[in-house]
Length: 135
Image (cartoon, rainbow, N blue to C red; front, side, top):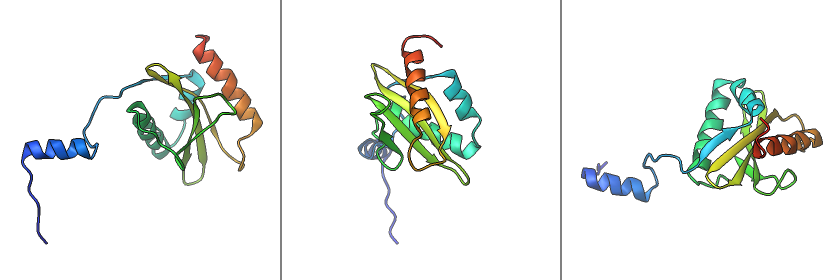
């Protein structure tokens, strides 16, 4: 098997082309306190997956299915992050239509195929709380 060698400047160019460079996030994260508490209560694996996905969103990467999907029933610009653990399925709502911030405002364990109406209602309330500075 033949190995390839690259000059350091070529590696930087290759990393840029492949979007592998380590860049600072474009957007900051804001959390509703209850969403943050929910995320912190999860297993290390779930927390890592949520963190990695949110880091990608901060960089402007569109996640798409199966990891994320739009949730227009909550509000325009809201997405549902979908993370599956060994024994649990976790959902985290985040909002991307604020200038330079991703708003993470609700998290819950999913137990049914359809997102429960109660979770959508709570999500709507928490988003408004964050957007209007009531938390």
